[in-house]
Length: 246
Image (cartoon, rainbow, N blue to C red; front, side, top):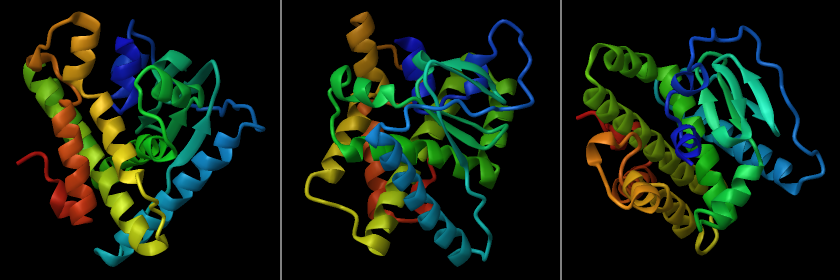
């Protein structure tokens, strides 16, 4: 369960996938999930929405061209440029190849194990991983990972939390702007996203798995923090709303 949570919402996958000294792969072949799974179309549609939103945002703010991430749906095991991953790793973003990796089985876990059902809960997961892609394009990820290597474990954890909360906030930016562009939201959608954000807070997961909470070991943020930063992005709709490093 620790591995699932760690990689699921974006901790640096290289730290998980390359344990034991293995070298990152240079190629990232695409493994395929069942093409008759209706979730394939859903994931592709959400990713398409994120591309529309971030392309428009990058163009409007600085006239830059948004480099779209690639989607890899896999089942069982997949080779990424960050290393080999199994289904237990959960969804992750690999900055070395610019790809979002998702095993559709995780969405069933999200509903059943984490008690966070609903299409928009799943959309939040995808938008969070795309948020890490945006961080990668903006150079934030490299700066944070460099700082983590220079700091203590506690400092590295604190920086990881800030990076993860910013990705949550970026997911909120997507929802805000997708609603303005396409009127995508239905009643209860935002609540589904907030429920998912709360369900995977470090404090809740530690309490469930260990029976106690140790804030110094947080890597993603508490339930309240994750909810708060998604809401900030959703309400503000721009990058200025998401400076988690101040």
